[in-house]
Length: 143
Image (cartoon, rainbow, N blue to C red):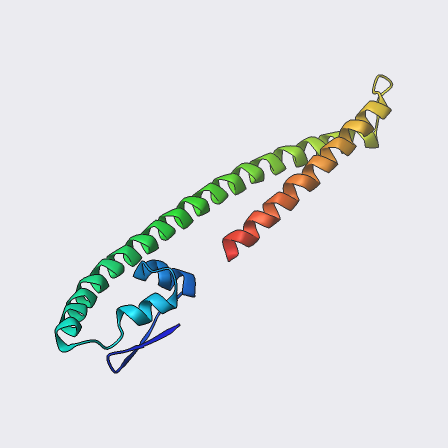
């Protein structure tokens, strides 16, 4: 968004809504009324007000940016922690499945093949679910 005022052009990053919040106004017509040419005495008051508003808005903007970075950092840490947990769980499930495969490839007389197969299939579904979640989280980290 571009603001044309006092013979200068100022670019504002963000949406119109953010610009209005920054200026603490309801709509653009209020901005036009606020900075419309008036008598010479009133224009100096408006100019003084503008100078005071800019540092406050920069400070607010810096605070918002800091909060956003902090929030992003917290989210990244949460995702990394979950990724590490999933990697550990995936390793455990894979090891369990490998053991079940060995038993199923050469079952003993006391082994319940149906129960072993059911357990293997449950572990396979669990592994697929954890792997899909891990992939999704890794994509988020890459962004």
